Length: 239
Length: 324
Image (tube, rainbow over all chains, first blue to last red; front, side, top):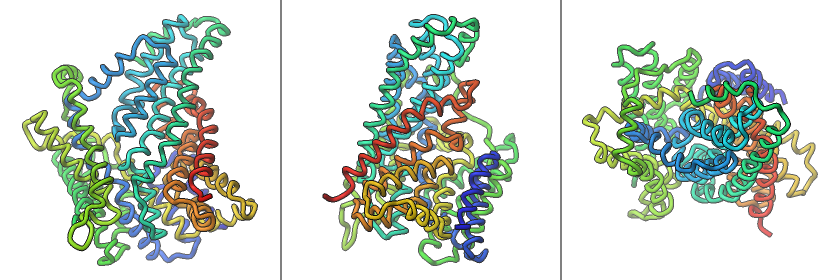
């Protein structure tokens, strides 16, 4: 049971916001020492573990081509395509973004969205504009809520889309770990296939909640005094 | 036979090119130390072949891995000088190329699927054309090369160095986090070797009613979510919970289909990722980027989805994974 102290190291390390790589390494060393491994055996385990997990990092080889397409305007083109969805309510806009994010991630296009590339410059400002059109000037809680939901659409879409794409880190980790530890030969495509039922559930649940956002914003707009800080809205995320 | 190790060497070659780009970038801060990080990583990818083949001592690789962690602890590698197009240039280029810009990006999954679904089964001589169980990695490596050739023919950037400078730019944004998943996988294996899985199994055995399939499924899925919240990453939780419950109970005792059990188990872990500030890059970074007053705003927006979705995962696993 003492070996669970290594888990405590991870918790404390992350809570103190220490460098994650150092935290992980120290936790590994602590686990090894508690279980009675020699320092040499710990180094050996780090070495075999890292060498055996190389498949997790192979996604790196697509960076040159993705970087090259970005150089020629990928994000601007994506922005154009998404902006054709304008004229919708916040809820419909975010539900549509969730669908696009999930669909492209399922094709392996993880770089199409993201909080820095898409949410801040495109999705959040468009959502706020759509909400203003419908509810008038936004109050502080409304603005916070819209932005939080915009971030959540991106994250949920990515998480429950990417696992349908075979060459993603988590699928490679599953097959890599299970194959080396239990001597199975798992088919990565099978694992990816079984991510589809959950992906559909995620789309339905989170999509419905995005559509519901229109109503709860309506309530917020009715309840709160309409924004005394309306000016802050126009200088918001679009900067 | 096409061997998976060649593709790890391809990755190593890319890291080495990045190291050279860093070293020759005279304006970049701490360029020598940053170059050392990428060069050391390249070494682990090449020497890893010897380790997995049992041809070289694993502690050498282990030492290099610790070295990478120490360099990362000092805030390395740093970003380089960005040599790319301006916003205005990109706007013009997007007008010129239009939706065609997506073609090279779509080549990647297309080629990867061809390898995974079809070439993985093609025979060559006495064995398979592709090394057994490695079609995904090989497919991704080939896909990257094919997509790069397609993109070079489309855009004609004038120098073969351009895609590697752009790759270096992206890798610079990611930094040491690029290999964090591999580190977490290593930690999971180390935890497993040290008996963390057994310790967790001891606890779950105590609370789990004997012979109840549905209870075991719930403990695996909810355990994945809770452990992910603690560790901040489903990758680190997966080996521990799988050693404790997923493999011994769900697969061995209840004869669950491994592909369903492990795929859905990982997704149950993702439900935990949605709820934890430990997953800083997914939950705290967006809050900062969007200038939210409430740092937990994105988590609050995600929790009401994560809980029913966790229940869905339990249901999917219970219904589809087991023989009846």
